[in-house]
Length: 93
Image 1 (tube, rainbow, N blue to C red):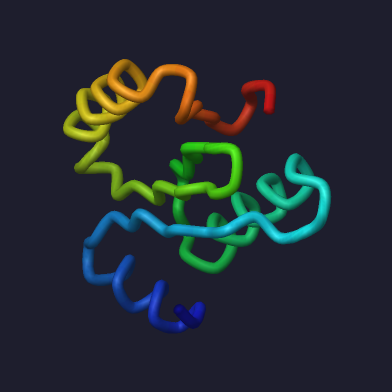
Image 2 (image 1 turned 45 degrees about the vertical axis):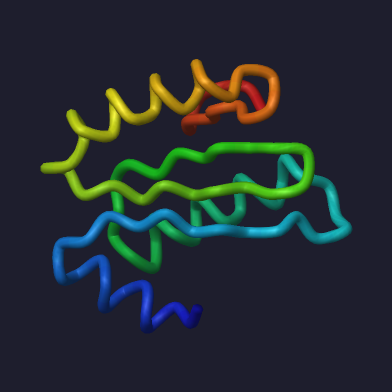
């Protein structure tokens, strides 16, 4: 997707779950860069990331969706323990 498409969807009140395959570069700086860029481009406050061995899912939340995502996040991390890890800014990668 293009940044403009993400901006339009987010500005319409949608939360976004963005699939990203890891490129051949160090993962930690890549994840941190994308979280920063998503915040900057979309004006999003809450961006978290679900990490697997080869891909990341960036969850860009609308403030009004936070409670629903808390429950869903717990369910995903519990059901996929050891295969999908949750990372939130400020936590260790």
